[in-house]
Image 1 (cartoon, one colour):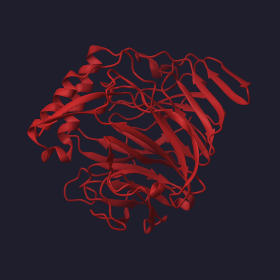
Image 2 (cartoon, one colour; image 1 turned 120 degrees about the horizontal axis):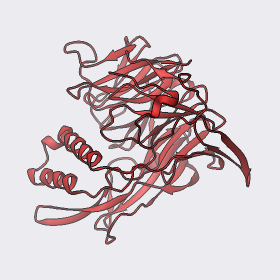
Image 3 (cartoon, one colour; image 1 turned 180 degrees about the horizontal axis):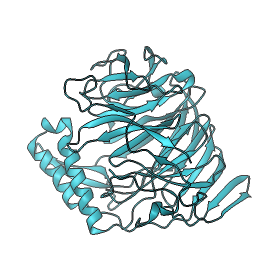
Image 4 (cartoon, helix red, strand yellow; image 1 turned 60 degrees about the vertical axis):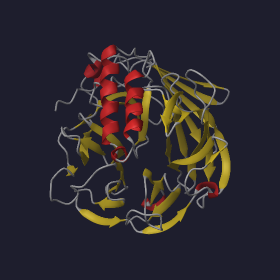
Length: 418
């Protein structure tokens, strides 16, 4: 797999995204908020960072060997000493490996009791290299110590168990990050079944900071949730309308790192930096225009969505009529005119923010804009094809990589800084 160059050459042939023009940066204060506006990147041609396209660690995909049963992987996340932790949904386990890929500890199984999991929703590294595990179906959070042992479990605002509809309205809170003091960022949202509104709408989510025992500490703010439209489904002689995400629609991306909260609303290429109380400290902007979606982009995305639907374990048990309706929804869905700007946010221990830009669905190599701790755009780093990065620690990039048969691997790659 070829690795695209970074620096000035990184965007040759790219559509949209940060361009390597060697432009200036303008930094100013406005009402106590630092605004950093980037026009181009700091790295000169050939002077940027790159990820070596040869894995240091490759777990999974090897029949009969340890780690060959990987599927529905959440994470991986990296501890400060380079050890790797990830959740394997296929076995309902959380696994710990050393930096060389040797297994150290496994915990968990399918179930609803302490130390058991139903559906993984996220992993976060917190105080003392402890790990927070989210089970979105049980709506429960479990804390593991640095060696992978189960410590304690709690729920956000006492709302554990299955989701309950009241008058057709469903409200839920999902963990979205872990602050350095052990408090949890939760995002709460509600949706209405049989909503009479037509067209595309984007309801707000509320960001709440919960204490380490799950009780509410403070409300941090509200920001836009995903763009949705309604889909009508019929089964059992009844028809109902439920909200569905707009394909390739806008949604906010957030990240908690230490005592900072980072947020991209996706109305523009702009990152908000907030403190742990929700106060806006800095706005980081880049001179990027929205990228138009092409018919080829839409066709590629429809194909990916149909393949993802077929791969869902629950689809093997779903009624044929429901599967047909979901397929029809994918095949007939209306797409926006342009792509969003930001897909995800990561951070490294050196204070750099890694902004994953949204690219064409046909592009298999994720592209990240690297921003330093002062908000200066350094440049672009293109990842190995088919890798979804989730952690950057000790100049090692780790994530989930899919082979030609769509089998998941957990891989780590060296990051070279010139």
